[in-house]
Length: 590
Image (cartoon, rainbow, N blue to C red):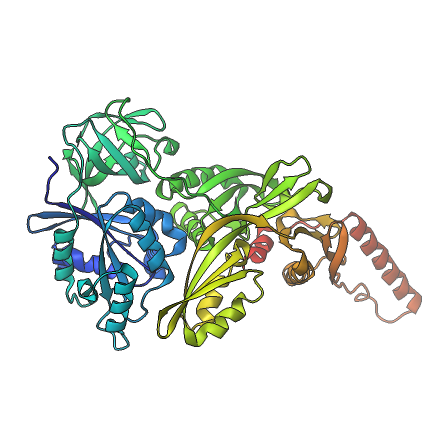
């Protein structure tokens, strides 16, 4: 029989609603972390998380409260890390749904709640930050009660910062969340919900024991990759690794496999002792919707980048990468992400954790072209674009965009949405002064800068979430950029036909500012289907060839000027522009 004193749960909420602070109070209340070692956002182990004030990686921790063992998984709140949330939900039986008492229900609150309901988890609602002067505690409590269809008295009002009613919340977890199911007598089945790489222990799998038990030194089978290994070390998260001799049914812990090839351990795989047990359902593979090319600034770091991406994928299952054809930047990788923040975080982690200096292209969505033979061809970058004569139909990804905003900023939000080429679906009232807007828009319109604009126009009060709807027809073209008559594929872009001139002018104007002057004039051109639609010219660098002359006949000066002119003409005909990585770096800054 499974130990009835185990409770596995996670905390879910919108970004910045106090998940990490609540986790801190749990750690203190259960004496998991001594007071002298306690620090804010204790479970956010990455410097990047502390600097940005957001949770990027889920983090498990085992706590003891009286006779009960509590396994908490702290989760991210941003839409780009929703796959982290969905994986943690599959490893627990319950979830605390946390809502900020000042901001109320936000877009990710609703999205994460739906994820938890799909897993049939017990939901424990809580309104946080009741200590704030601007907190609308009763109003938000009523909002949350209406969302869940429950009595408002079932909602616990807390202050994670000051620990108010946190113990009551902990007791509610014990009372309402069931102990884990599973059969200790069955053969081992464990679900891998996360992993990381250790240079000494190899791949370390984060797992939930579903059936049976696992002891140190036992042989194991990774069912998806048909890999055999040994349990070099097993243990709990305290939150540091704490080695143990055995992990039992219902427990959450880690397993050091000793495997040095990252691709052999996959998130969602089943770990067993014998190869013929029924595998667990695992996870649906996330589909990256945003792609960017990543190149090492130093071409000699290509293999290091390859190794770094493989190790990072262990810790970030939603990341994909494939070798990219050699360009002016050298060899690199085409990487797939769940959103632009995800792309930003991955590139920053590559820089910090692996010491790589990188050039990252502007993120773009994946398009689909139906050619004249009715074949579907996926377009991951402008270099994949087909000639116009071969294109029958162009399709692009659309999303359902949900925005929650105070009614006072409704006009400003509609202004941002006005030129996105989307479709308004409906408005829903959340409360007297807040409204939910539902729009359908092309994904390309919201992946860069949209969230920042939304926050700026709403003074930080609006929030957003989106989910993919599939592909729809789009009037799109490939905008090409020519430098001194040569196409520079890295600066090409797929844009709506109606905005092609505006985009072309914007790119070549920026190039004109960034590119250094040459000894000859350099034309910068934007082209559509072979026709030049915009042009700028970088003037030649001036050299005073008359400097050494002191007076004398003007014909001598004219001869020198004519000679200089002929030289510049020859340079212009034969000269080629070599673009430094700094130019690409500046151009790719959004």
